[in-house]
Length: 81
Image (tube, rainbow, N blue to C red):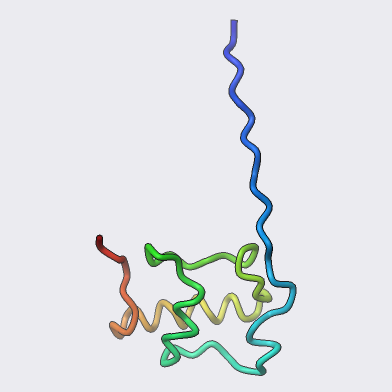
């Protein structure tokens, strides 16, 4: 007999409907470490569009800006405990 696996229920996240960068009429820039830090987890991972509420255009630019800031040592690659 095959074992039944338990069904996991996903928690519903409250996601902002408007893109932060579209509303503020800004672009993600590598020097703006405070706003880039909002879109990374406590472990240093980049938060996806479905959780951050950013439009596709700004999500692509945000990920490049975060990677560039990491390369210039403005943001850490990983956060060590």
